[in-house]
Amino acid sequence: MRAMFRQALLLLGLAFLPAIGQAVYHRSSAPWNQPALREGEVRLEQARDWGDSVIWVDARPDEQFERDRIPLAVPLNQDRWDELLPQFLEKWSPDKRVIVYCSTLSCALSHDVARRLREQAGLPNVYVLNGGWEAWQEALKK
Amino acid sequence: MNLKMKAALAALMLSGLATAQAQLAWDKTEVELRPKVGEKEAVAQFRYQNKGDKPIRITNVKSSCGCTVPALKKNDVAPGESGEITATFNIGNRTGTQVKTVHVQTDDAAQPGVTLVLKAVIPEELQVQPAFVYWQSGEPVKPKTITVRAGKDVPVTTVAVTSSNPEFTTKVEKGSAAGEFLIHVQPQDTSRAVSSTLTIKPDYPKTVYATARVTDAAAAGGR
Image (cartoon, rainbow over all chains, first blue to last red; front, top):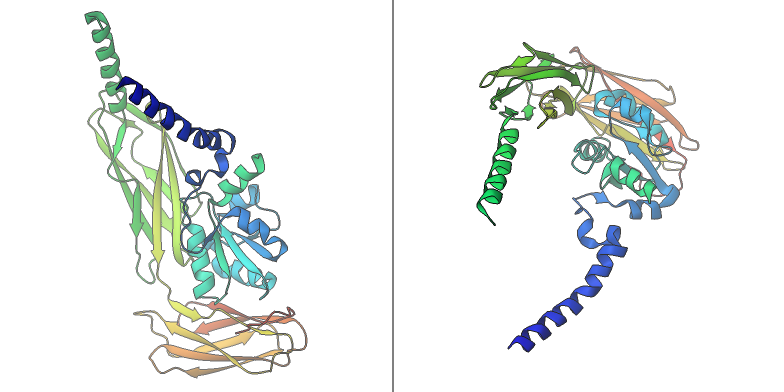
């Protein structure tokens, strides 16, 4: 009985080995470590694959945009929507994908701005960056 | 485990509980407001109570935006005492969903800071749909239509439109519903990239804008 129990434990341990390896050596790419995608969201890896066809839109307040931002990002926050929207539209073109970001995963501003771009301006190909500015900064550390 | 060890463990757990209780308890830290059309400000109240057994001092209250003014009647909160922080959000010309935060700092080691969230969903007095029309380079020169709709209780009977660029012409006609207007926009030609800001002024104290553009991109799919 004891030998059977020991064998079962051994088999269980062996089955866990690959999972432990994944958790230790590829922690960031572990599927359970990635936040779930909400509707209209895109992961940073995907956004990077799109390269120059992306216009980054910063939905955070002006002070945060002034402090730091994704290179070439365009400000478009709800505080100055009427003023900033025409400036953004000057830079937009039909062959571009638009990716909106705000501070963190829980921040809703990017979804609000993306919705207004789709519904009010009628733009196609508007996405939200999953994880926002925080995800961008995390990626820079790797 | 002997008796002494058990007693020490129990004391440790009790001291942990005592620390956890020495904090401000907030009724809610997030408030959603839905101001009516024409309202100039939205005020959120965040109520708290000191549920601990020692006084707490609120050392700093700071808003994320100059448009939101937090107010606190007194900084010191005695055990059992209640109070509130009000956050007055100045709506100005803002529309859509606005999220403002107020950060509160205290001398309570268990909870030195808390972020209060004010979410205001501001109705649009005038809805412009779409706020952007464009033609691709070489696309046939045909008018595209922007619809302006007055919100509930917003009395609009006429609308005037001016284009910042004379290469776009506009024509306004009344829509089928009350307070609805159709603006037909057309560029002179679509052979080169050009853009215009359309200023839409109704007989109501609110001006809205739309953008018209001829893009130089080769991709298909213009509106």
